[in-house]
Image 1: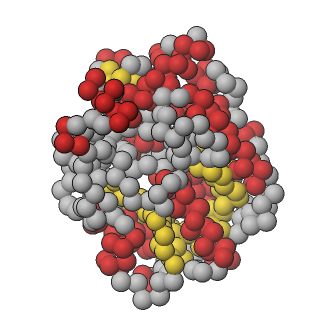
Image 2: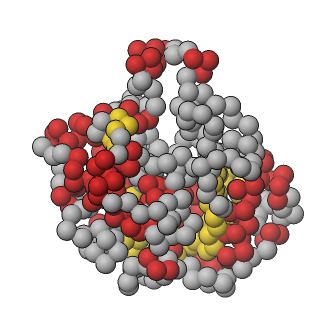
Length: 394
């Protein structure tokens, strides 16, 4: 087991308004979320001495302008003017889960006392995936002109392969999507809060990239979420009940970087990250009370359930049937609605929900007697990260 098991805790969480359009600069969203997380912890701005984020704009063909389309550490430092700042970082290789892990490591090293991690996502006007200058270069010249240029097409290839390999059809995926939209109605911060989805709606929706229909894809939004981390001993003196970090992992298996259409890239990446998390935390999949698994596309949850060890390969679509993943089921899954319900703000919202469930602070979507909370915070293509949070640090 990890020597630092349960020595780091999640305290406050914060959210900004989530919208489809960029009515205000992205920096304002990020600042709202960060201030909300600090207030939720019962802290003051001057208490914060650590900052971490993953600022990348995943949309292609759009300009990265600090404060408008991304929010860097430098931007946050300028806005907050923290008098006692001692540490900061922004990562570029492991998505927002990597920034969260770096903040935990900084706290363990003693270089800061209270660290804020945020993820701010911009929704640019026009097409989310644009070819820069209407030109396709390199390998993209053989795919882009034919409409195979965004992540949806690449992910669809892996999903089609999974269905074919396992003799399944896409019909059973409706169970996951509808359950997550149902959970969304317990999350007032989510984009689709107040908007229900029926089975008829799901099957009548247009195809984005077969076998993905519209509701298999998360929706690009403008918004931000944030979380405060500190050491376990400090967290016990703060306002909210803390959630303790029992273990984490990072993807260690790589094929060819960027091969988002490779099913084996998913599976090996997910299992390598989860293996570390199970070993460090001392838990196994059978110990988990509630799980949040990244769902930029619905199929990512299927790969996660299998590669993290919750079911055997080829069985995930059958595993999620018969109420197993509902709030009162055997494995409540993406209890906050996931990215399909909240909007595309990457995996920090999954991390937040994992911590809220472990600390008993998830409101009407709280899973009864939840203690061991698992999080797969990003699709295990090249950036997968996994976490375990617990209520009782035994």
